Length: 444
Image 1 (cartoon, one colour):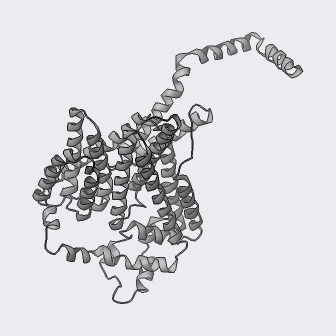
Image 2 (tube, helix red, strand yellow):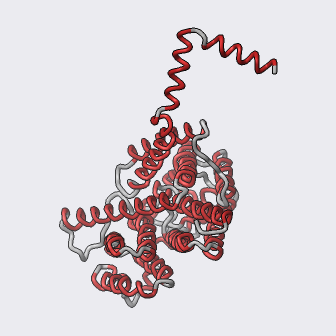
Image 3 (cartoon, one colour):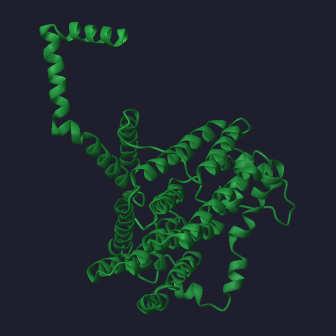
């Protein structure tokens, strides 16, 4: 009682002065304004818009400045809201442990890295930043509406990118349709990482919606992106796309007919036909350069099986390091020019992880993969909400496609690796929505 009385007396004497009284009254009035009352929600929406813009520009060239501005502005605003308890923020998820272990192991590997400077740069730029974005997504896109906003952002941006690439390559440059669609700045196999995920998202949303106008828009976007995939004439990208669509079509047999006709037409018309429908397909796959290009990187794993050579992708660009491990090979497997100069990283994400982070890092990655599919399977089997069930299948399909692409192309050290974290974040959103569904005992 004495403490409360003393507090009241000090407060009264402090604001009893004319100047202080006016300031206190101004603060009280400010708190009652609509601006202050709505500020947290406006900032929350601003964070969503910034992250959506960051994701929207992923496929496009020269996007670094926009992404940096969006990322750090979203991070500052989110920190402000969380610090003042105006927005909930949780790290809890089934993917937190594997991500934490991966970060810890990559950090330990910095001390043993062959190129410490580049490993430190990539550790922050291609791991820590993406994990921060991962948690921003799961905490600020945690509703069905915002989840779909994320889906549409990925679909529309990729469709615009694919359309622009085809117009430039065939229209502006004047290349014939019989020529493979190639991007000057992005390797063909990396293009598949960009495009296959939105194809699955568009197909899944098209199967779910009952609005004819929305189905038409989605089909248009889907057709544009799929056309670009087929024009690249990348066998593996086309095969992964077809496999993903087949998985989704299992529960939508009536709607499958149109897509099958569309894909069959693309297969017969575009240049991928000559690469898929060929009598020596298996022989060409066996002779694929990516098969023998992996030998020096296998030697790296054998030499450093625990910690790897370091997280930095540019470690592979050191010709002395590549030459050292190439010399360890027997003459039959040893790379010769121009191969040793042309390829500076393994075209296999599992081999890449094992070479850079050791077998321990690869096991942690598999732990991440297991938890991802375990979440998706539980949601699909236990949820009574059709939204959660259908999207858990869609995300598992797209993640499976990403893992298959990883057999033929490593994307871990590129900026496009953000797709891996986006897919993980989207599954966590479904997992949290399923948790709320279980708490209330009914679909949300």
